[in-house]
Length: 320
Image (tube, rainbow, N blue to C red; front, side, top):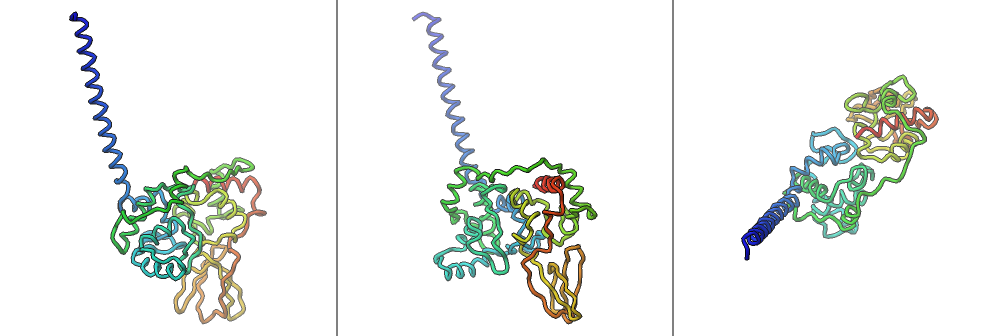
């Protein structure tokens, strides 16, 4: 064997050995990273971050005194409260549930059981626009386990029905296209100008700007579809948010007042009217008080012209 040929053989073998070693090393490193990623995303800390961040759970829920949402139950010690709710679910035909099963159900199928005093209005967090994946949902439940209980990620079993929907990819929001393209900047001006034909800020807040007669809208497009927003503007009575139900009060002197009940104790009731006025009424001056099915928010179907409507909508869709 001549020397040039031998050198080529040695170089080729050496190159192949180095190549195999590098590939093995990379495979090991990537495998370790994948394994870490597979478990590292599920922890109470990760779930807490998602709850108060991407998941936007805080737009409807409080945890103790943290947050300001009133639309859905306060989740302080929810794992402890789940003990009683599991008993209720058993009486309703779902025996054998654990407290973790209840937490899973409350996110996977939020309308199957609704806490007394609230409505079936929680969106599916694995569908647009929220679109949490399986790991993120598991992490949120892991966080909720620590509210009145112990974290146990191994006990969390996401239903296959939900897993399949996630695996199939994000559910597409039904196609919807505006008649015209709105201008969000103009829409913002209409929203906050209380003298405009919209004047939304008389009742709604965005980033602490506006009044708190109706639900806060700071991240509304991050939890609600465009179709929901359109319906809310045109048919506000179709879905009335929990905590913002209208009441009709008839006073002892025959005055009729409609508004959202903001506060009540043994002696007083505080109402917020459609005009954004706050009225305090002593109970001794109230003849009757009854819930209503018509929202105090007016329909803007005929109030706004087509251009104004789409400008307002464009602004709302920017609120992620």
